[in-house]
Length: 148
Image (cartoon, rainbow, N blue to C red):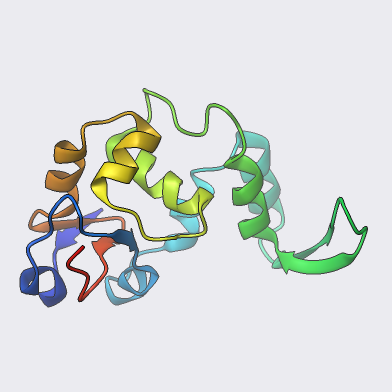
């Protein structure tokens, strides 16, 4: 699922110091189904749970330190758990999926191609080329107005 980039990408020329993130609004603007893509990052048994329980939006979460119970978004909680697996990002994970998974694991905190490269073991220039081309992949976009 790819589409030509929007005007924000045309306004800046990303560099190795440009910070990127997941632009969740891109998914809606492009008419893409973010939930389906997010489910693809889960373990098979987690995916089955969500396919069998489509209406589950929140679950109880117990803080391991305080034992306080809070309601959290079920899919976000499942993604957070999945991101703790050692194989969540491997050498077999595609570049775009690996970058997306880094942002899932770090609560979408912006990172540069250099920082992304350190986390996924890939060449920062290759990451920069993929994220700054004419095509926006999975909503991975530069922070608008971020020059580094």
